[in-house]
Length: 164
Image (tube, rainbow, N blue to C red):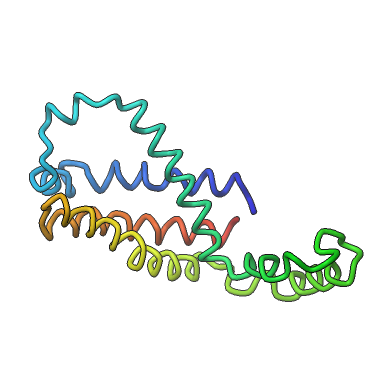
């Protein structure tokens, strides 16, 4: 686990959001279905919004590592084995040898993007869509917001898989 890379990946929703929701991209198309006005946008405390967005995005990036890095599962499978934390124990040596031999398998940006996209479609899309339906928002609102999160998960998954 590389907390620095997780912290960098957590910046992706802020950067992508600045582009995605820019008035010249999808910002104007989003404002109507979201019930937003220029006045409402200006009324928010942007420091708090950006800080909380970053913290919540850190949680997303942290969680994505368990979905995009296959090697993360090895220790979780063996966590109750005696000697798991002793590098000189039989299980410790097994884990070291396994990671040395297979630790870089499927650790690419492309592979992380694949799993990030799958996570975006199977996790972010349903959450956005269910919330939007109860808020009586339409397809356009769902498509814009879910599309944003699917692309965020895709890029975050790529960064985390390749570099964390």
